[in-house]
Image (tube, rainbow, N blue to C red; front, top):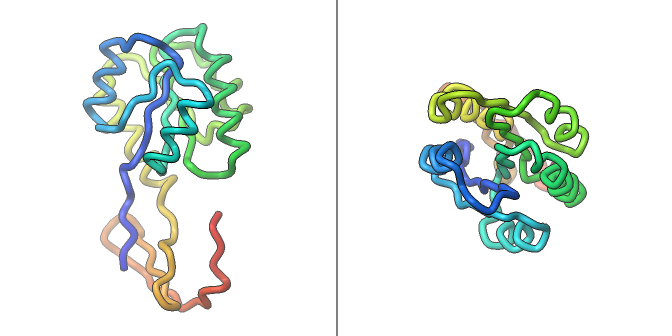
Length: 162
């Protein structure tokens, strides 16, 4: 069995209205959106979608603190899902606050969202989400991402989630 990089994700924003830049991101990735995000809404959507990645979209400087709180809450739940903060036309000052809150990655975007998703976001997510599959019997297959694969014999009781 070869592990495929899942594109299952969730886009979260604390903003009420979506701007054209966020609409462009949603068109690119096809993930569901949680607008006006709060802890209750995110918890509900995590239960429904069980995403591999939660993308926190920031396009207003006023949303940095509230988004950092949501990232910190998600970090307290555990290592997964992968938490990435994407700041559209914001200064890099937001990066320190979001990373200290628990964002695994930070991607500043200024300009074309589609190019940034294709050129930076997808490659970053693919490398971050590349993990071992669940064991089938006592064999785990790994994908190197470039059509190479490796197989390793392991005891099923020695495999634990991250």
